[in-house]
Length: 400
Image (cartoon, rainbow, N blue to C red; front, side):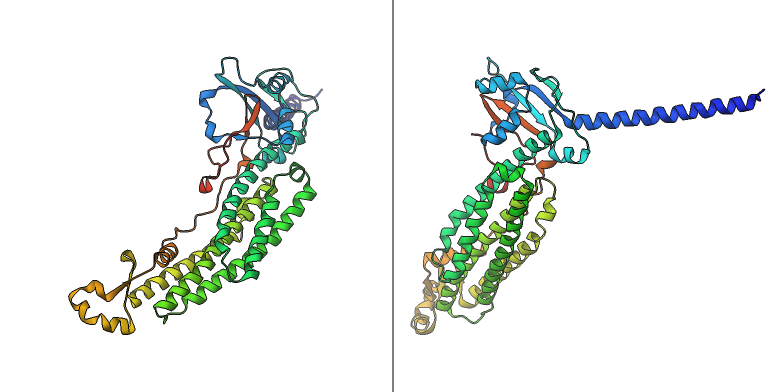
């Protein structure tokens, strides 16, 4: 007959095994539940008054819009098709929330086929597939970022007119060609975002364009440094140098803005798989170089103005040579006669070069890691970015 202590040991061991199994099962269940929550697409109705109309970005690309619609319940798709995705009293709209594409990419799970609640109006349901949700979410955010880049590039296009008088035709043609190629890469194409091979090719192209931009930017900094190294200029030569510097100064601003948009465009094409810091690795270096060049330019103007007697606020400069001698005696009685008027155009150039605002920092937001909120309203779809959406130069795209 088995001793009582052996029976007790067996009971304790069995109980321990059962407890361990129960704990493991509970953890696995929670993990699956968490993964499932990441994969869920939720639909809710919200008051139209709660929506910031100015923050909405219309999803106007047909292919992207169709991808989002495919994730919605049948009833909402029907109302969208009829242009009625707003209640009869026009006080509520639908909000569809897609899980962040980066969360899905790291969840390591695959969604079951078939969509629960396909005919429901509001609620939470599991989308047809993992790739479907990830693709729609990333394309919505990617389209949004590309639209911002395009707005910035259009602003740069307007500033290119400042380079028309550039004497260095080779340099000017390179800047215009660089801008045109970046504009082409920033044009939204759904097939590029959804095809890894095409996106990789575009990113490689951006790496090459970034290298060209850096070379041109380095040339502008060297030219400005060369002019500002001349500390013995008389007034006429100072005026001519200021006019020449302004051309390179304008080019520097254009190229630095272009370099920034190349980094932003690269970030958009990576669809959240690369951080902003990685995409903008070289940008801080060249921003700092440009800032140092501007400080050097400010010091040069300050020192030269003091040496030549330039009174910028009065648009005057001290007379020189024979002119100064002729006005020496009258100047004893009226000090203003010791100075001559400066052309308004020269004053404007000096002020432009000495009052330039500090170079703004790069954007730090990453909407690829945020859930994607879609607003269905009046038969159209809109993306509603989080509060961290970019505000560079007030370039955030608005609705419709």
